[in-house]
Image (cartoon, rainbow, N blue to C red; front, side, top):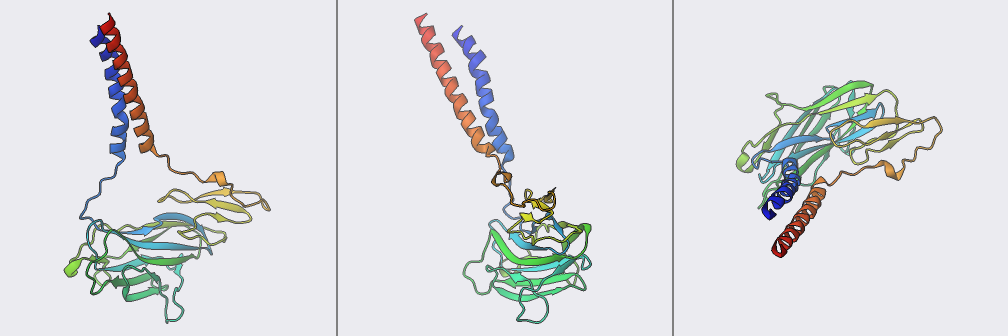
Length: 265
């Protein structure tokens, strides 16, 4: 009788108890150690004509050491324009990162829609790895567009490449970016400050990788965003672990109660 009752109560509790761990295991990303990718951040966002957007060129190398990066980008010059980040030099330059400190080339062509940037590390005892900020591009949105793309070039004369020790080509996936441009100019939008506010409407930041949502307000209304607007990610892993612990404790208590009653009888 005791065994039957325990099977009816304890086994279902044990099954339920394992569910959070399966959820956490399924939610855990699997990263290939040898994959080296080049990404553009933000990958998608909505801005207005006349606004600026800071786009970050970034390497994700995991445990792979990186010696240098040749980043060649293409964009539509009719819709986007690169703003110069070094007025002391002729031409248009983007802002280089600190890790790959030796800059070989840095130029942007707003007529052809090209960005050419190469940088690396020379004479280092240990080369950088992991997440590496290569450079930052400041774009100005020119005209309304449903979608305008920024992509890495793989052409013969402009081949994007990540180099490892000894000049080895370790280039992996190349990610592109797509931006939507609204027709009305507003305040400046950057990757570091995605919350935009104007006298006619406010733009709320969206999760990474999605276009920002626009919430219209009446003209003259206050544009201050309430503190409760921002939402944080729900810690499902922590919640699952707490539920599992509670269920385990309940199962143990029930088992002890059943055993004591069985011994008395």
